Amino acid sequence: MSKMSNNNKRNRSIPGLIRRVSMRLSISIILIGICVGLGVGCRRNLPESRQSKAEAAPAIATTTVESREVGRQLRLPGELRAWQEVALSPKVTAFIRRMEVDRGAAVRTGQVLARLDAPELSARRTEEEAKTGAAKLRQSEAEAHARSLRAQRLEAEARLASAMATWQRLKLAAATPGVVSGNELEIAQRRVEAEQARLEAFRENEQAAQTQVRSLVQIEIAALASLSSALASEDYLRITAPFSGRITERFSHPGSLATTGQPLFRLEQVSKLRLVVNLPEAEIGTIQPGLEVAFNVPAFPGREFKARLARVAGALDPQTRSMPVELDVENRDEALSPGMFPQIIWPAKRPQPSLVVPVTAVAVTTERTFVVRIRNNMVEWVNVKRGISISLDGKDYVEVFGDLAPGEKIAVRGTDELRQGTVIGG
Image (tube, rainbow, N blue to C red; front, side):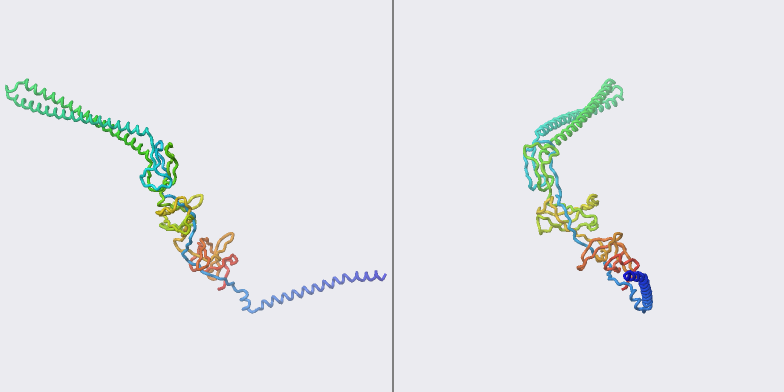
């Protein structure tokens, strides 16, 4: 019984304990609110100087935009090509009689490189020579006949003149009755008419002879042209060098049949070379007429060669987005060879000064690239495009393009944490 009474007493005391704890918590919350209110009031009553210092504008490190001559050296691959090159092929089908040169031989302009045999060409030349001789003979005979007819014409003219003179004298004498009979006068007149007819016949014969001579002259000209063609075809049996250079390839041997379009040699001029470089699109602005560049080749380590810019394609390759340019290389000692792949040291220099800023001054976000300009102690974001990176006075700078001017103040460290319109301290 005693134990049950004790449990009942404890059960009755629990609600009272809960009420006492709730009252104490309420008192604590009230006290905390009072303290917070007193703290806010105390802060509002701080001296004005302390408050202004707490809210002072932030100070940042700044620098200025500089205008500098921007240049660097690019290392670009290139290719050396022959100044001139040609595959030498016969113009007629013939057998190779003799090869005068071989691979690696240095040749001069007009030098015979190979001799061919084609009997049908020799036969054609003989036939054309005979035709030409016959045409000349016929022309000579026609000219002699024309000269004979001319002489006969001149004789007929003289005889006509004599007959005319006789007829005129008789006609004058007949004016006196009884001096000349009428029959004699008529005979003289008929003789004049006969001589006139003979002279006209000689003239027509002479004209026909002259026409024949002109026709034979044309025949002889045609025969000479055919003979010249035959002789030229025989000249095709000699393969000669169109320019001085070096034989870099030989494709045939004596006794083989050479046909048109089948190359016998490859000739390349190597005393002067073309250096072809594909310049990236971003560097096209660095092209300057007469620019001299240096290059080297693996075959001669440590030796530097020179080339001068000569020709620019003027259009980009749509696949590589680069522009082919050609430079001339003097190769008098023939140390360099076509087909080499040199390394070119290209001086990429802007034609005019560029604006440069420290690399850290350019901020890049997903939306924009900008620098933080300070104008009237206020932050401004200026959109820019990056150019090439350079080193000036041992520091890293970058070329920028945008609405900037030399001497303008910018933040050394560009960041989007410096919001536009923010007022900063000095």
